[in-house]
Length: 170
Image (cartoon, rainbow, N blue to C red; front, top):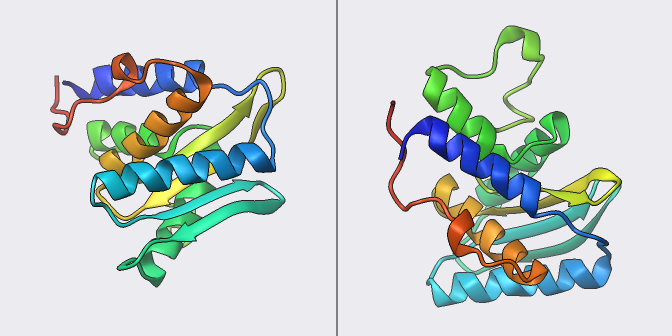
C-alpha cells in the first residue's frame, strides 16, 4: 500500500464510521468491545472515550503505564484540533517527510499525530469527542478503534481495514 491509498482509506473510514447517536451506554459498549479485541490479540491498551467536555470511559490494562495515558491525551488533542483521525495526520506527515508546520500552531507536548484516536462524529452534528487507544504501534492502535466502531455500527470492517504493512512512497 502507498501513503496516498492509506490516506484515502482512512478518509473513507471517517466518512462511513458516523454515529446516529452517541451516549454513555455507547461509550461503555465500545470500550468493552475494544478491551475484548485487545485481550484476544494479547495487546495491553489504555482505552479512553470522551466527549470534549468530559470523559465517558477509561480503562488501563495491566502493563500499561503513564506514558500510555500521555499518548492518549495528545492523540485525542490531535483529533480535537484537526477533526481528523490522528492516523490520517500521521500518514500525511510520513508521506511529506515532515512534522507539523510552524503555521499549524501545534505544541508537540500537547498534540501527537500518531495513530489511535478516532473522531466521534454524529450524523448532522460534527465531531463531538474521541475514541482513543495507546499500547501498540499507532497503525494497530488505529485498527482496534476502527474494528470496534465498524462492529458497533453493523458495518463489515474488512473493506475498511488497513493492511498490516506500513505504507511506502508511491
